[in-house]
Length: 222
Image 1: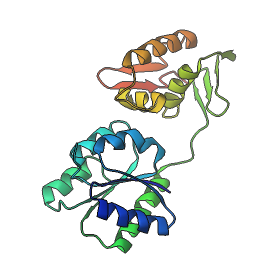
Image 2: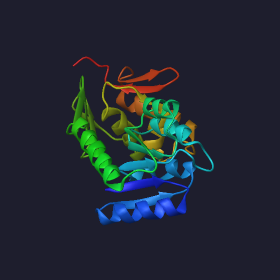
Image 3: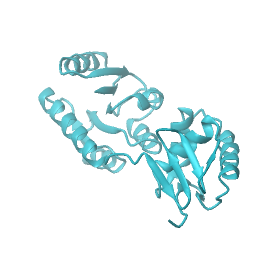
């Protein structure tokens, strides 16, 4: 498993990396909260210290949850009830207070990843809404039986939305998954590509804009 470790203490980080390696996990250690937003997409789980030097860990968690459902285990010295409650409400899957027994940490990681895997049903690889069919594996789109040619970015946008058909997807999450970083992507590019995509699909109601949040795929009658 690819683990992202956000920890500013070199001694703690080295010990954790060693233990995780001994148990078959590949760990990327980062010191700053900003690096979490850079590397989270290539990780299976985040171990997050709250006392990071640039951004409070709770703010990192809040920003991460706007764009990703990555499993997060908070590992911190903050054991007060307010911090624990805030961490869990912001979307942490588990919350451990230092010092933590390594066997317990490994067990919690295993439990979180098992729970996350159980929640994820097999992905639907062909999505249909009305007479629109999106084949996510073949990267092909048909409307009314006729194939529609899309650019790479247009299909990437459609695939993110179709892969979550019927579910609202935030603008930040869409930017993050298509361009790689919601905080640096050119937001205007998304608007242009969505306009072109809607024009090619000729089904205005297929991609619904949710004002102030994002978009949803699949409001056509079936």
